[in-house]
Length: 289
Image 1 (cartoon, rainbow, N blue to C red):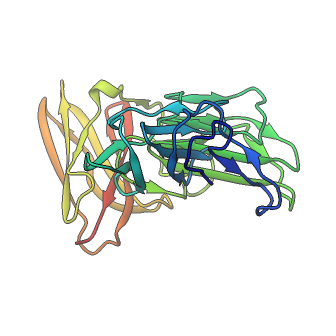
Image 2: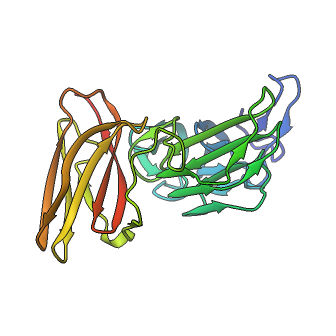
């Protein structure tokens, strides 16, 4: 909860026991009224507060609040909300209208967890998070990534009433958000993988547009030489929805493949594109009018 007013010691307080006791959580905030506060679900307890001089942000990795001025004005912010479809935070101001910005991004773009990290800490990455860690009984494991959570060979968490595991696909700067995750390493629900394939570098990825989409979307890609191409669409359970291109050898040039979402439920879908010995998986968000 937050306080208005000009008492430098009373700005934001938090409680971990339903309000029986409260902890001062104000370090780093200016001595200005705190007008509103909002919690970002699926995050490492990310919090945004609206002050008389703009928005401030803090999560469990941070020891103090920091000014969140990415696309936000330095004026009195009276109300905030988060649009989880577009992954935007919106701020209503006093006299300056309505503003929006992308959510705060994790510090790591990609993160690999191979040495023991305190499992009770929330581990997150902007793009991919990969874990090969073995955790003992009684630990809480929480992962968040913007694209994929990979549980590769070696990952193990003992199942018991004292252990729990949560993984989120939650992009900070791209549309779409879900509290579920897609298993990429091991298990029966991952999409079939081609052997000896490498991920296409980011600057050579296919483009999917529009995204989110209502009826259909287009996957565009370029070929620099004749090469076999496969494009398959999956749901969040890893079940195949449709073969868009089935191991077809195409000549050099630019191509556009249309995916029609008619008859499908609104939600998140994934396409895997395999070009020769390279592959990449992209996310598509289907919405209904």
